[in-house]
Length: 67
Image (cartoon, rainbow, N blue to C red; front, side):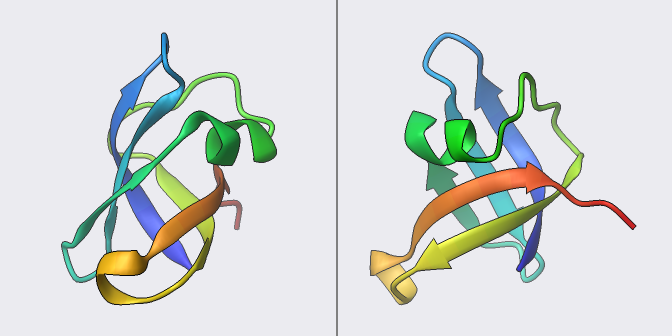
């Protein structure tokens, strides 16, 4: 699934993304670390992996979207 980086806190390594329908979804340090990223800037397109649906949606991986 693709999304757009919305917020990122380098101290906690957590943040949020916006899904293509505009829904914000938060991610934690474990999801950020799983993607091997060092930094994330607002507006970057990212690829995410998730589990669950609706209010139980949880991001398990955040990495940069490459074309």
